[in-house]
Amino acid sequence: MPTRTLGRTGRSVSAVGLGTWQLGGDWGDVPEADARAVLDASADAGVTLFDTADVYGDGRSERIIGGWLADHPDAGVTVATKMGRRLDQVPANYVLANFREWTDRSRRNLGQDTLDLVQLHCPPTAAFHDDAVYDALDTLVSEGAIAAYGVSVEETAQALAAIARPHVASVQIILNAFRLKPLDEVLPAAAEAGVGILARVPLASGLLSGKYDERTEFGADDHRNYNRHGEAFDQGETFSGVDYEAGVAAARRFSALVEAEAPDGTTPAQAAIAWVAQLPGVTSVIPGARSVAQAESNAAAGLLPPLGPAFDAGVHAIYDEFFRAGIHARW
Image (tube, rainbow, N blue to C red):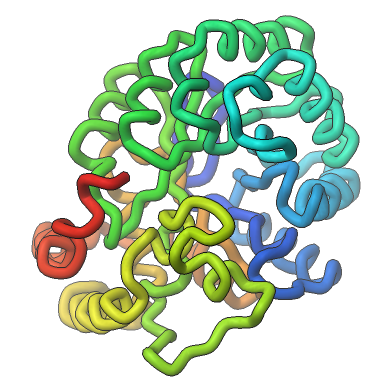
């Protein structure tokens, strides 16, 4: 697995990491034994970055990772967690006292005295411009509670505000073949500043796998059912904010592009992950996995050769036809 430096953390991480939202909840039930098997398979395939959050399953994802780390103390895995959604996402809640409480809870869950990387979990826009927020994060670093901090964002403007701050180590942003706006300014700005980029939702909540159609049904506890229009949280988190039916049609086109331009045997999901991982400025792509097979397939995407200019042109053509007019200005 290729490795890259995660921005200002100085840590080396795999080009394909593992997102663990699925292991906590909101995607249907994943038994703990299955979750541990996903972590095992990912590490065996060379994955050295696990991304989680304190609210995934109310800490379940962190606790599962913490148990795994205790059993694999020499695995060399960097854990990036997130904080800030345990209270209402209003500027008044982004203060040092809450940061201490949240990070202490994550330290207990993960079994770490010092957290490798803590990211603000899609805070309100005002937080990205508040000096006191960054001062509080710097205090946590000076106290040894966290080694480094970054942000997870919904919008490119938020990412650019964070990149301009001198101690922000990384930015996590939705980036996939159906969400191309970060290519315009965010990736160049991050590369120039030495800030890492973690690309999340690389499969557009599974659309880019090519496995869903107009008749696919999702469980009542799956955000792809209950948050399609932003009923529970930002709409952009579910199917990257695109209309589901349009997404299915675009995914068919993407699968045809993979068949025509990707190496033989490459699945649409692997091509989607590899295309993002190969973008200049991207540090690591963090797809989720609910099974060992998914984890192994995702990690294998990090080994694909360059997909080439024809593939890249095809991705842009699909985006321009199906999505640019509807979502490019929004996120």
